[in-house]
Amino acid sequence: MRIGQLAQLVGVETQTIRFYEQQGLLPPPDRQDNGYRVYTEKHGEGLAFIRRCRILGLSLAEIHELQSYQDDPYQPCTAVNALLDDHISHVRSQITALQTLEKQLVSLRASCNDDREIEACGVLAGISEGNMHQQ
Amino acid sequence: MRIGQLAQLVGVETQTIRFYEQQGLLPPPDRQDNGYRVYTEKHGEGLAFIRRCRILGLSLAEIHELQSYQDDPYQPCTAVNALLDDHISHVRSQITALQTLEKQLVSLRASCNDDREIEACGVLAGISEGNMHQQ
DNA sequence: TAAAACTATAAAGCTACTATAAGGTCAATA
DNA sequence: TATTGACCTTATAGTAGCTTTATAGTTTTA
Ligand SMILES: [Zn+2]
Ligand SMILES: [Zn+2]
Ligand SMILES: [Zn+2]
Ligand SMILES: [Zn+2]
Image 1 (cartoon, chains in turn yellow, orange, red, cyan):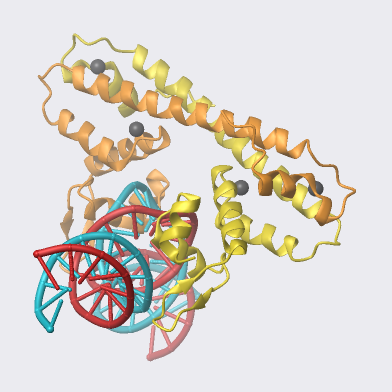
Image 2: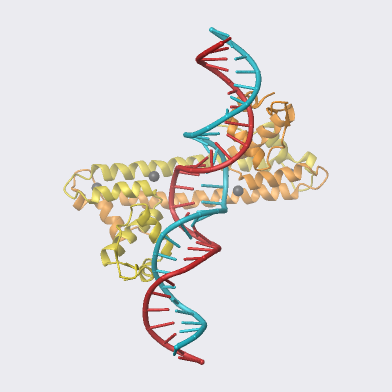
C-alpha cells in the first residue's frame, strides 16, 4: 500500500502520515526502488490508533507513552489507566476554566445594550476598568 | 518608565511587551538616547486592557478589532457587543465539545480496572477497536 | 573597577499539523 | 513518442501566542 491509499483508508492527509513518521509515532515503512513508502496493515492499525487518540484529545506525547506501554504487553496496565485519568482531569479543568470564562463574558455582555456610543459601551468600560467579577 | 517597571506593574514579561508592540497591539514608545523604551501611563492602561482581554480568552485579532473601535468613540457600539457575542459562542462550543469528550473518556476509563495486563487493558482495547461511543 | 542587573535585537522553539515549492516517477493518452 | 496527469519525494514556511536562547550593549551597585 502506498501513502495515498493509506491516507484515504484512514482519512488523513499524506503529509500528516509523514509527519507522524518524523515524530516517531509511526515506524518508518519500507521503500520501493523509487523511494516510495510501502505500508502494511500494521501501519494502518497504528495510524488508526493515533487518530482515535487524537480525537480523544490526547497529545502526541501521551500517544507516544501509550505506544510504549503497548510494546510491553505483560506489564500491569496501571500506567495506562493513570494516563487516562490525568487526561480526564486535563479536560475537566479546561471545562471548568471555560465555564468560569463564560460567566464573566455573559455578565460583561449584560452590561451593555446595542444603542450606545463606543464611549459609553458597557463592555469596553467593563474590560478597561477590570470589572470582570473574578473568581 | 522603562520596560522592566512596566512589566512588573502589569505582571507580564518584558518580552511579551515587545511582542505586543511588534504585533501592533501596543504603540511604539519613545526611546532614550541609548535605545531603551520609555513608557507612559497610557501604555500601562493599554497593556492592562490587552491582558484583561487575554484573560477573557479573546484572540489578539479580536483585541486588535476592539482597539479599532476604541479609536472611534462616537460610533454605536453594536460591533463591540457583536464581537463579544461571537466570542461567547466560541467559548460555548468549546465547552460543548469538551463535555462530549469527557463523557467518552469516562466511559472508556470505566472499561478497565487497575489489575490487568496491558494486553487485556480495557482502555487500550477500547481505543484500538474504536469503541468510543461516538456522538 | 568589576560584577550584577537591565536593556537591545534576532532567531529558534513550542503544538499539531497544513501549505507551498520544486522536483522525480509512472501509467495512459494523443 | 511526447506529454499530460496523478502520484510520490524532500525541504521549508506558516499558523497562535508567546517563551527561550544567543549575543551584545548599558546602567547600577558593591
Ligand atoms: Zn492530556
Ligand atoms: Zn456596548
Ligand atoms: Zn473569540
Ligand atoms: Zn487498563
